[in-house]
Length: 365
Image 1 (cartoon, rainbow, N blue to C red):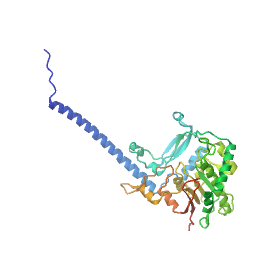
Image 2: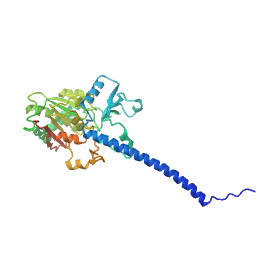
Image 3: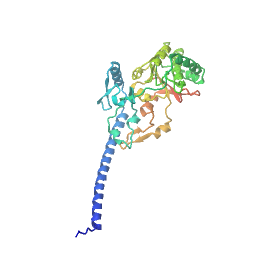
Image 4: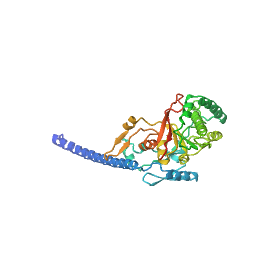
């Protein structure tokens, strides 16, 4: 006769259920402890980065950019770049095989202080990695159809004429007034991110890019005419990773020399005007670290009220900026630099630039 199988008693069911709950609870507690430990490590890492930054450690030291430029100029296939802890990292300037479907060239990545201190709740351990203000990444060149040199020349001639007749051009010329520029001697303009002229999107060239290059020539002329250059011809240099051979040839004909990243930053000295309009790298934070120039024409800073909204305080009392998360953000260090300048907002009804400010460095006693 077969044995009768009795159902489990409530007590035995409760025991197994309790054991399962205990195991789940232990697992949850272990996961919670690990999560808490990770967050504590992230907090400590964040505090350290902010503390070093607030103490004045540069993100983009000139010597580092100079060393990187020399490695690239020598044709090295691999370059060494130290992280913020001065530990070297090696990068290939040749696109790795596993990236060739998405990329066809390398690019220098510059990480703003906001990016280095950004906390992603989904990936908190990113803040535990060594902070790398400068690194090498890979990207694909713009795929817009190219245009001929003659088409570039014709478009520039037409757009430059419209620029020269515009109220914005008159306002820019009027920005270089005495006594704001009385103490300055400006013999060089270095521009960043003005954009390629040799590509057409949807059959149209970028009026802004053409007008901004024309504005660079306008500033060179006015600096000489008003003797801010002390009668010298003003040299013009432009850096943009998307310039192609047609851009280089055409701009050379205008008297503008194209330089490769990071050479433009190394050309900045006390007699330089820096010109930058909505770049896709943190030009302002780089300039604040590398060299304070004689004059600046770039995007206006956020109003003070908005700046304060982006500031946060850590548990150790250190204040840092959590944003804005944009490509060329303000920072406390940029604001500190600009306190040494007199600025005048540029009225731009033609929308050639957006919101720009023209800065002249004050007389240093």
